[in-house]
Amino acid sequence: MNGRASVLIVVVLIATSAVLIVLRIQASTGEATIGVSGADAPAGPYDANPSHIWNRLHRQFFVRTARNGKEYGINELDPLLWWETKYLVSGPSHQQAMSLLDEFLSTHAEKLITDPFKRAMLQRDLWAIFDWLTVVGEHRTEREEMQAKLAEAIRRVALPAEQIKRLPDNYAAAIKANAFPGAYQPDKPANAFLPTELLQPDSPWILIGDARGRISAPSHVHSTPFQGRSTFLVFIRLPGGRDATLGYLQQLRKFPRPWIYNTGLSMDVEPLVPNPELPQFPEGTQTALVRRLILIDDQGNLTPTNITESVQLRVYRAIPPGTEIRQEEARRTQDVFEFGLDRRKLFEGEAGGLRAVLPGEQHFSLFRAHGIDWFEKMDDPENLQGVVLSSCASCHASPGIHSFLSFSERRFVPSIRPPAFVESKIADSEFMAAGEKSRQYEWGLLRGMWQAKR
Image (cartoon, rainbow, N blue to C red; front, top):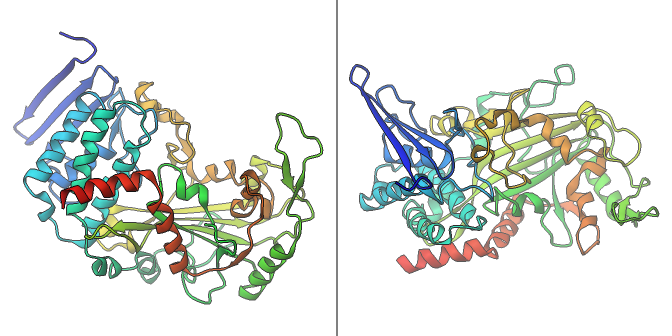
């Protein structure tokens, strides 16, 4: 027997509890996959029956099992997959994923669920896998085979454009439910808040746009795991309210030199550094990054939605002097909050599906990660998780405006023209996000596969 490709499969049927446990150990990747079905199995997000094909698809693509048998990822917003991941593209996990997709397509399982929220989320999840397959460098044949089946499944669950536009605003539902405080509480800085006016017109929260025609959060739009499938909205609010915030943005536009040449230039430093004379925003300033879902309608067009996937908030309790990167200082002077979309809560109409990330809660890094899949290198990668609310300071570590990367990160790109911040509209940001996605290779690949089936 070939040891490299060998697979040990053990099946145990426990009649008393009607549970079927299947243990698969992949010798090629060292990853164990445990499938559970039956009365005592955990229910998936799409149906009360754990064996429902939609639940099994979600489990196959989102649940990772460490070598010690511990499972991760069932409630993750994005799949635990990296550039170097072999899971799904080789060995038994690939064959199992292909079999599930074949079952879904051959039985027309897209007809089993008509709820528009569930169809939207399944398309979102399958689309994430399709795009991820384009960044994996090996196993080209297996990747292309899987992408062809994913493209067809994505097409079949697509909603009409008008139905997508009518999908309820889950952020508004969370506000209406009064599930979280509607404003920052200085006396209770650990309490997560969801700003009531954040997405409202003429709000004190100003949606940032760049008069030079560039998107405001390019790293989030283009990087894995996002890859252009979401609109990212960047907001800022100064303590003085709407007029004070607009006045500050005007100051930034007029300031002639937001960054200056580094006079201590050497091979290990950046040629441009922030100008310490740049107008600084005051203590108490708040910023927000809102991620909103883009779907593909039944005609194959990119269609923005009202579904908020995540909200990240930062409150600047203090603005230290200088421009240097000081992560620990940032953690002491910024209060950070985050909300993520919970599929079950969304489907059950609970607080718009938004869940507050708890202090101390940990996760595996996906955004700007190094591509290493620790599930395939360690028996238990749990200790490699980071505290979610502390991770923001890894990038947003300079004082005040210098940590606002929509502004300061521009100095790292070939065109060093600073952004000209102006107030924008959500529709404009959605149009630009869809335009960015439409120019990506993986979108052209998906469109080609989709159209070939029509």
